[in-house]
Image 1 (tube, rainbow, N blue to C red):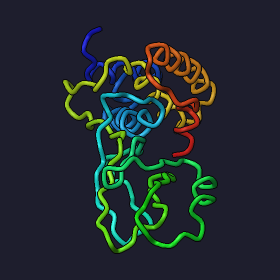
Image 2: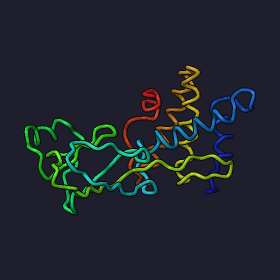
Image 3: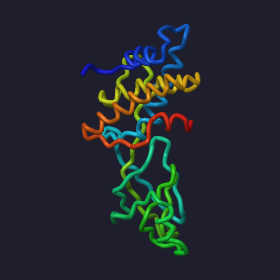
Length: 208
């Protein structure tokens, strides 16, 4: 597959959005739509190994910790002082386990949105070294020759950016059509072994 640049993405997004020239939509607006979908939405829908790293921090006398801006989310495995901890996405299960517990060495982590909670609450005897897998935002595409972190997400980025533009225009028919294509491309990524969230990009974009 040819290397996918911002310049080629611009041309495709213009085609999908039905705006082939600068007078209909500014290049800056296209770049904003591309980067929003690429950096903010796509990593929450598709689990790419190229975006994974580690997030490490020290917990001391606290019950929560916000993820840094570069992280879209945290994932297991997670360790606290080099011991594997529980990693929860369900507040109900987490608080059933830790409701009423006193501050101590944390054993489990709960992720809600962009906030991590410790169970039990980390006491003042730390610091406790916490490390987990992080899914990070890709680098912003700025120059025309800037490239995607993975060529296989090209179609998803093009369609998602165009959908973002069309949603602002309230062109529901065009959005629905592009969303069908996007769901198909997501299915193709899943067939390649890429973990895909079942929600659609349309739903994610409508949350904005």
